[in-house]
Image (cartoon, rainbow, N blue to C red; front, side):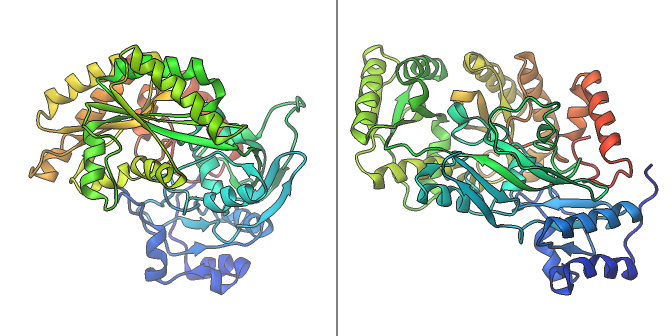
Length: 476
């Protein structure tokens, strides 16, 4: 049963601090500041305490005390999320639980192709560890130098390789979770086949810390490709890109590991605002596709496959021009262009952003309808669309008019969101493809999701968290 929340007093703060030691119980406002605001500045909260445990046992003790005292807890990974799911509210009643010290690689199983890691392990470290052992951990995000595995799983992160390997949920075999009561669920199984009852890990993956605290996970590893080739192609419109995708998908199958759609303005922003970036093609095109072909045999094999696909698309008139990476340095440069697009948009002023997904075949028509509707609301807004066309996920963003008033532009945020998301739902799509619900999309999610689904989620929440202390105000 929930009860009125209070700001923790000094005695309670001392009790929490005793669990992790004073060095890892941050009380100074300057030390706390990085933990209470998210990267885009949309949400800022307050707290009197940030706890940094080092073991699941310490997390267990923290959660048991939190339940006993009805103290809200906000789990936090690398604080890279885009929907405010990782920061406390303004009440000051919550304690922030940072998993950053729990960053060990517990085991790498060569025969089983798995890696068991703690929640605070940074994604890039996991990828590099797998690479050194001759494997691939395919989850790839622009924030991989700072985001953490626990946060990736809690938000079910997607990224550029979901086309073949799936999202974070698909890359996890087992989890260790501390429940709000302090009980520890040890489900760190390495099995690819296990039909013994409910698959409990999937309740916590994607739950954004509202049901428990993921403290460790068993991750799937894959054979490292022997060679990859990255290509950029210029196309006239998303319809042509869809035909190109059909050719690439049929020709490469699982060797097609990335297929990204980019509107010209997104590339222009990157070239104009990110030093060292270079236009991949000799002439500008209305739209672009970046695709990656991976081969388990060799780089030459990947190149031959890419050449066959590009030649077919050029002959059929779906692609106007294309270039393939000729070296590892050029391959990195091609990826760099795509990965810098989110940051490049910041230099263009305020923006209204959407993380949506629709069926792949519906992408061209979605863009026709969304562009027309948005132009009717903010006629001078610049539509900046880029994203993972191969799995149906687009980042459909609008930047303010050049030289325009940011506050005036952002005053249309709700109207633009509602319009775009309404079109998404008309295609049976999702208003949150890979970033989660958090605070940003909670009200819209509750208002538009099927009532039976919301009721089931609330029943699960009450069962796992009867005190209502787990990341309150997020998701549901």
